[in-house]
Image 1 (tube, helix red, strand yellow):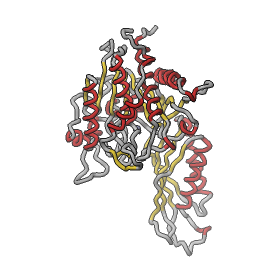
Image 2: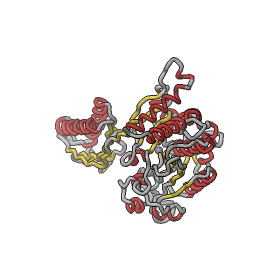
Image 3: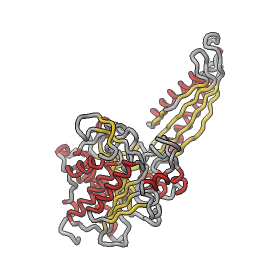
Length: 447
Ligand SMILES: [Zn+2]
């Protein structure tokens, strides 16, 4: 090693990480829930004025660190620190700085700011990595303003055509006609010249630190999730057709009541999800014509089915189909008809074993120094992400994995979203350790 500093002595400073995170949240802070300046949520929608401000701030940080920064045609921001071998692609740390309209200070933001502090730690120590190490802020991950989540990592992965992304129009236009993504990229000056593509802008790997956004780590008193993949999901629109008739004059036995049948279907899907250890959710439920004293002729609901394995998800869908058919035919008095429409089909994502191994080794190392680890208690566990992330797209093209930190009460996409400064720093140090392990590994000649 060409440096006096060993990688294991590199530690991200907890106070600095917290102050950088909250400094970045001055742009777009909203929805106060406590007294201190930090006790607010966020409303920083992709490519709005506050998003421009935090982007400018990030560019300024790169400049202060003396690092090269550039922007691609989707507004993705890249900051790279060179290593010993300039011909190697960078190992990247990435996440997003945009938020939901009623978002918190950690979802996405923790991942980007931890990457920034990891770079700062490398710069300050003078530690020399084998290849370059970098940071990326992906545009519009939330899909809250422009309705396609992780769209810009999707363009980079060449899974989403550039023009499709540019043409996306904002969901809620504040004034006048809804603006397109391209118009807003141009307006805030973040339509860069670099092509958004893994071919012209390749990575060696992509690591993403993120809050868990669920209750599992907190409930199990654990500190780190070593994320092995993302669960599969399918979205359906289910239509149940019966016959509209008078609520007072139609005896129960003579009914074709699609609302009653649909309610049974929702309950059946939940039962099936339990059996398969998957998830079933109905978020939208409508009835037609929808009056008090008339049985509806049609009930429509959405069904979101999830499982970590594609094959089991397929079995869940099949079980629902069979059971829905049975309920509509045999358990709905005069019978109803059920129709399925597939809206979204997202297969399970398996992250790269080399990246998972680097995260695992780093998590074991960082967690072992905690007082809670006394007596040999393991403070990390393998997890599967319940939500989609930019890492799903990067995983299509380069070795990828993720790291989760605890999330207070499992609450996210909410102004009170919270991860303690200690847990944030722990996650950031696992991120740095994983990146350095991966960097060292790639320099070894493969035999
Ligand atoms: Zn996120």
